[in-house]
Amino acid sequence: GAVVSQHPSWVICKSGTSVKIECRSLDFQATTMFWYRQFPKQSLMLMATSNEGSKATYEQGVEKDKFLINHASLTLSTLTVTSAHPEDSSFYICSAPRLAGVAEQFFGPGTRLTVL
Amino acid sequence: QKEVEQNSGPLSVPEGAIASLNCTYSDRGSQSFFWYRQYSGKSPELIMFIYSNGDKEDGRFTAQLNKASQYVSLLIRDSQPSDSATYLCAVADAGNMLTFGGGTRLMVKP
Image (cartoon, rainbow over the protein chains, first blue to last red):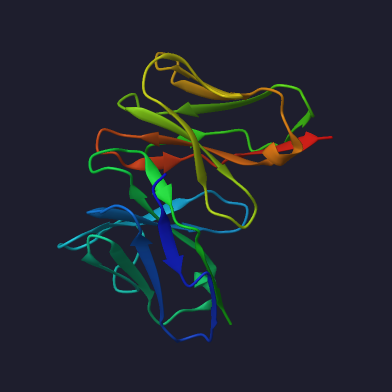
């Protein structure tokens, strides 16, 4: 199956710092990628849709100035959590559709963010 | 507001039994339906998808879809302890956006 990677796997940072998370599609091109957040014992919540060559589309309640998304190429999307605070501590997961226009998504392994 | 509902569980079944996981959804315009398995601390892994009414079988897994009742289920035959995980139901709309249910935690006891 299609492979999606994320880096880093986990990160611990001090409150007020910014953290960048990378999402790569390794064996296919993805014009669209999705960013999810998952708090403990809760389901995945879609944060935003990352679009190659255009602005990301954010879900209601997600601050676009805090969660910066850049879809630099057909295989790379980045999520930057700016001025992170303890309440931003969560499991961040990206995904990409196997094919353009297909709902089936492959997930990256996730990034565990802990903000002290 | 599109909703996908699952019983949070835990659903406990003995090894070798059939585990039945259920999911209902609110959006009648939903086009495709997915079951993901998520182990603790890991990201979701796609198990099955189904687009049409009826049953779809893949090994020990069977997905069942009833669009009229807005109901999708996953059956796991010959359950194994390694099947113990949280199972997420996801529903895609016409724009291929996924909405996830809260997940059902399955425990298979040896």
